[in-house]
Amino acid sequence: MAVLSCSGLKRRFGDVPAVDDVSFTIAEGETYGLLGPNGAGKTTTISMVTGVLERDAGEVVVEGIAMSTRATAAKRLVGYVPQELALYPDLTGRENLRFFASLYGAGRKRVDHVLDVVGLAERADDLAREYSGGMKRRLNVAIGLLHEPRLLVLDEPTAGVDPQSRNQIIENVRALAAQGVAILYTTHYMEEAERLCDRVGIIDSGRLVAEGARRELVERLGERDRISLRLDGDLAHATSALGAMRDVQAVAAHGTGLELVVGDASECLPAVLSAISAAGNVVRSVEVTEPDLETVFLHLTGKALRE
Ligand SMILES: Nc1ncnc2c1ncn2[C@@H]1O[C@H](COP(=O)(O)OP(=O)(O)OP(=O)(O)O)[C@@H](O)[C@H]1O
Image 1 (cartoon, rainbow, N blue to C red):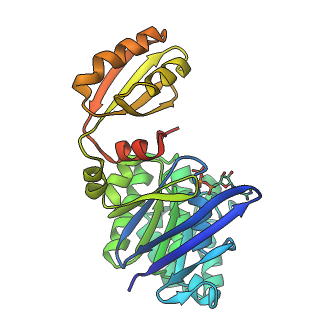
Image 2: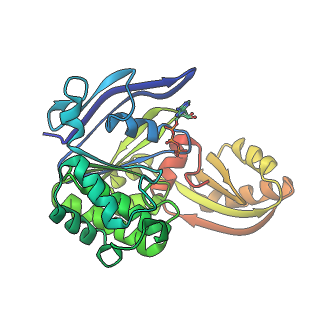
Image 3: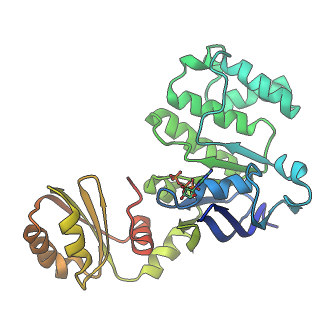
């Protein structure tokens, strides 16, 4: 039996269909990554899964318990690590955990255990306000683990944190999955999704546009290459010129970079470079990559995952 089963989830905000008929399941011990550009509907989906946000339609079932009929029992099985930090800066790490433990009916031993799990035992008696961003995030993970959830939901847990905390969080997720906890994970970091997730769902404009293991998704893409370029100058002309080329299947700009999906890079690179120079841009670097999740994402959404 799946630990999490979502079917036909829908939620609108005014005219915006933030989530439009999203269904997926997560098995025991499975790590499922929800990937999507900004505003795709990841947080809205997660908020419905955790029961924080009402659904317009659809059902969320956790270990056989439906959110629509037994919300309290279903929520008890879910741990949530939100994007926004939820902790008291004037309490120590341990006091924060004891406070949340009292709400969840967890004991002091459990507090000590989760402090250990996230690597904060030595700093447990410092005020949370003195923690680095990454330590605060780890404290949030610890809060999400207090009541021994069967499903742990993490909304971009590594965004903007230091490498040590990032590694700690990734190791925590791995260890929890190995213990059978189902994990729902969102991230902007493609390489993290590649490393961590057994399966990914790609969400764009509120719809799940593809789902599968990394290898399946890449194989489905067929023979394609990704070209990453760094350019000088305004990218608007180059982006539209490249988008009009027959060999270019997707193009997305981010900062000073352009990402392209093409059939065979060695065949079309000369034409790509002359189109860029005709648009008035100077190429600073070119990199051709074998198809990966980023290529799948770009091909399906026409957007780069990074901002
Ligand atoms: N409370 C709200 N009121 C109005 N519109 C909202 C609200 N929450 C989300 N939206 C809109 O719904 C859409 C999906 O937003 P959501 O936050 O779920 O996306 P996301 O994939 O999590 O994006 P990000 O990566 O930026 O966090 C967006 O168009 C957003 O502007």
